[in-house]
Image (tube, rainbow, N blue to C red; front, side, top):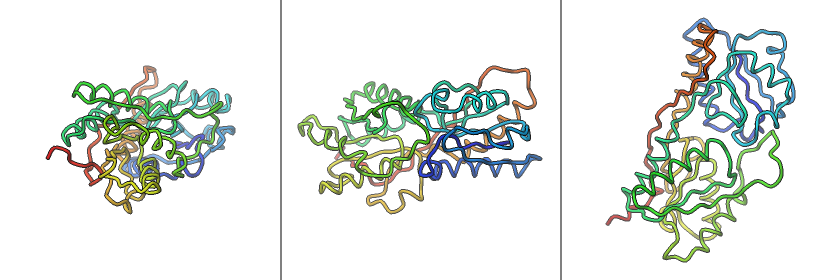
Length: 292
C-alpha cells in the first residue's frame, strides 16, 4: 500500500491530526501481511517512484480540502492514482474520485450546536479564514441546520482566498489570518454579537486565542470557542483548555487500511464508498456556561 501526502506544505502535512491518521495506518498494517510505502508530494506535480514502477496495489491519500484536484495536481499523477484502488482520508478534495474514510461531519456539527445550546448560548457563529473547504462546508451546513433547529441565531465570519487556489497549501499558523474575522465579530453590536464560535480545526482555534489575547479579550469570558480535531500537542498549552470534537483520526487511518484491502479483494466493485467515523466531544473550559 502506498500512502501519499499530496499538495500540502510541511506546516499542513505535519499537523497532529494528520500524523495521528498516518499512525493509524501504520498500526493497521503491522497486524496484516502488508508493506507500506510513504511519500510526500507538496507540489502535486511528480509521480512517486513506487507508483511509476507499479510497486503498490492500492493507495491511501491525504490532500488539502481546498482546491480542485484536477486544477491543482499534475494530470499524469491524477491518472496514475485513478488507475489503482485508492482511499482518501480525513476528507476528499473537489473533483476527486474514489473511496473516503473520514469523520461524520453531520454528527460533529450537530454535536457542537447541541453542546453550545446546553451551555445556554443563543447567538453563535461559524468562523473560518478559508471559506470553501470541502470539509468545513459540510461542518458549517450541519452546524447551522442543527443550531437553527434549536432556536439559536447563527452568523458567519469567513474569508475567501483571493485568486486561484494553488498547492502546496500551508496550514493557518498566524493570528493575522483570523484577526480580521475577530474584528468583524467585535464590530457587531453587543446585543447581537455571538457569544460562542465554532471553528473547524484546533490549529485555527490556537490562532483565535492569540487574536483575542492581542485585543485584551479572554476565551471563555468574552467569547466561547469550540473546535474540531482534538490535537493534543497543539492545544495542551491553551488557557483555558479547549473544548473540541475528536474526529478519531487514528481510527480513520486504521479503517482506511481495512477499506483498501477490501477493494483489493473486490476488484469488480467500482461503486465509491464513504465510511464515516462518529466523533466524540472532549470538554475543556473554553465554553462559558450561560445557563445560571
